[in-house]
Image: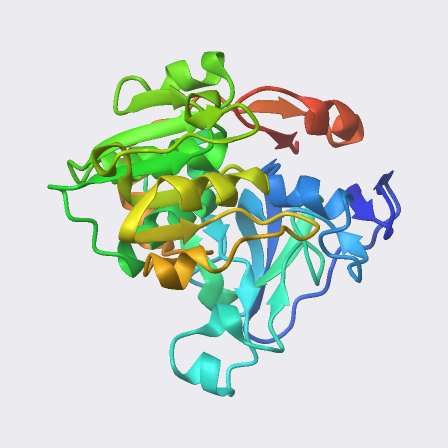
Length: 321
């Protein structure tokens, strides 16, 4: 089968990969659409140095074989973390943190291929009438919704989202549903225009003064700051614009490390929360009800993966026939 394989240094298009075997509790899925995530780009920069295999974790497909007959023929999306099922994390509802978990596209073969296998309990059937081109946003939208599970957003206060990319766009739409006063801070005026229907916007440079950050009054700072820039500069900005005793939610994952002035955290009593994958069913509900919407995905043939990865479209991915 055709697949996009990461060999430890680069992505390689291959047509000689075997169709995977599915075992008990798993299904074989034929991929229809698979989208590129920023994490996939970070893998190419060394984010998962030990990974060798088929990339990708955002997909829509249909189940062709399964030990669960109710799934066969259904159009589905799927979560990416399969735990061992027996450890304290799996037994306490934290499967995505299982130390032995299998992560599609990052530790085991993912969805940038004609077929993939996935554990049945991670599979979600998409609602009738929801087009695959919209359903493919389920996984990143679920990650945005996770913030509202972790943090109570008081709508009488204010919030900022740092970043003007795809994940930031989803997060901003989810937060705007709460009625909170929302500002999106980015570096690209053209991208920021997309946010204007549901948020105020500002440029990153607005918070700089010479070689450092501008001193802000309390009213100019934010009670909640979501860092979703995908860049190490985002957390530095977050620490400078969050209110004392405020909350920072970290969404960015990227290769490398960043130097922080950690003394700012205890002195200002700042709460920092890491946030990752989220619930699929609420994401499917928001999508099917049209309460969130996203620009059209730019789809490529898998062999044109270099064009897809370099695309400046809102979202790029692959269509499988």
